[in-house]
Image 1 (cartoon, helix red, strand yellow):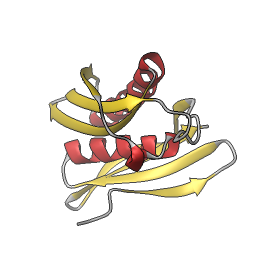
Image 2 (cartoon, one colour):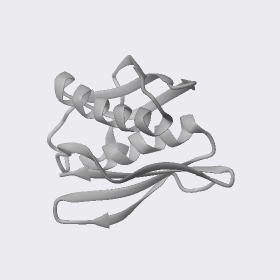
Image 3 (cartoon, one colour):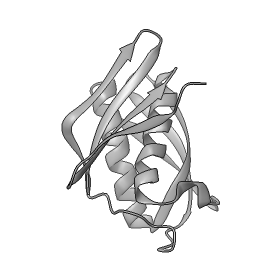
Amino acid sequence: MTKEFEFVDDLTSDVLFRAYGKTLEQVFENSAKALFSIICEIEQLEPTKSFWLEIEAESHEELLYEWLSRLLAESEIRGLFFSRFVVSIEGNKLKARVYGSKADPKIGKVQVKAITKYKFGLVKQNSLYVATVSCDI
């Protein structure tokens, strides 16, 4: 299996990562995992809550941006850290089941303020989707 994600640059005010997937759904799920790996000790989370999210955008790249931005907002609003994501995409519409548990400061790491457009991208390289995401911390 190929890696799910990797951290590329650890800048002073940003963290840049690349996420990978054999399908669009997989790269969206792995991007969300990478994002919450910055925010918390994701492997220590036992999901106790879940909810549905639906998002629509003009393109897959914009959909990825909206997806990650919405996850940040939902985490803040709901007071939850997320660790598992089941995504389905049809056209430019995303529907996802998001799993998480109460945000526990003991496993919290860094607060991500926003997803930025800096170096942001989603491309297909051969049979692999690659997302490049920059997070303002």
